[in-house]
Image (cartoon, rainbow, N blue to C red):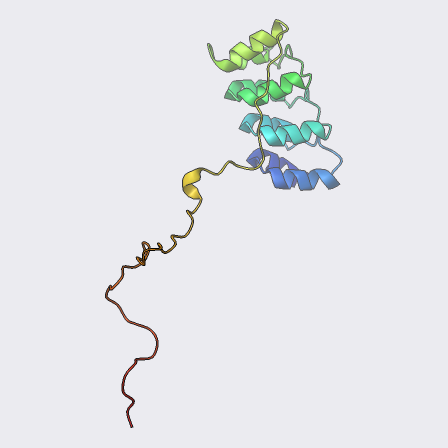
Length: 177
């Protein structure tokens, strides 16, 4: 079951993560290299999965074998919304990895991620944009209403009055004996 949680977090599978969290108390489980489910979600930028794990009690300051935190991984990948979530969840923004580098050192220069980390160090907390688990369906993917017959007797798009084609039904006329 631990492996399934780690894989679901890595893939960003919200449904599986939610189901596993109902029955699986150890949200801080790690894989063979010491990476937690939250670390996998942070690295992949899977905001909703990271949020579920944090709500279930995942340690936001958990470190892997190289003393890398989920914030280091999210900052390195430029995963802006996950960086914001971790900061708002009380992560240590000054955490150092085994080489003495903070998450700020992992952020690409002059990016939104670096700006958010700089603001957080200065005491300015980020704001998270609202996310919905239900995807927004664009208008063009929703089928239009069926074309109805017009009142003047003309048919809609599917056929034209007096068009060619086989007629269905019985023929009127003389009966054969």
